Length: 152
Image: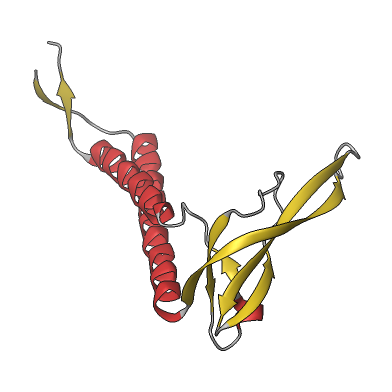
């Protein structure tokens, strides 16, 4: 097992360059998302809310003209000492009453700015860092003038 010299073709260098660009784009996007989350945590207030009801609506699909029912949770939380209600985003499943969720809001405008925090929100930047790092490492390997060889 040793390194052997290797001449890269134009196609290999082009695809490695595109992979390198996309990898760096993913890494930059990971930093951007991480900064947005950090800014929200620093400036918005976070509290626990409780699902107290669900709203349903029927959507008609434009492709096959089939109706689909979606549900949005109604969440109640304390903002500035007052009980405040928030309607969450519509999903294909119904959240059970009494379920606890995390809510972020601006104390100056709790009704307009409140949103439910996704429990996997913190993993998004790390996923982007991982995918971008993998793309960068694989792309840089294609630029190297040598290849690892296990044969003769």
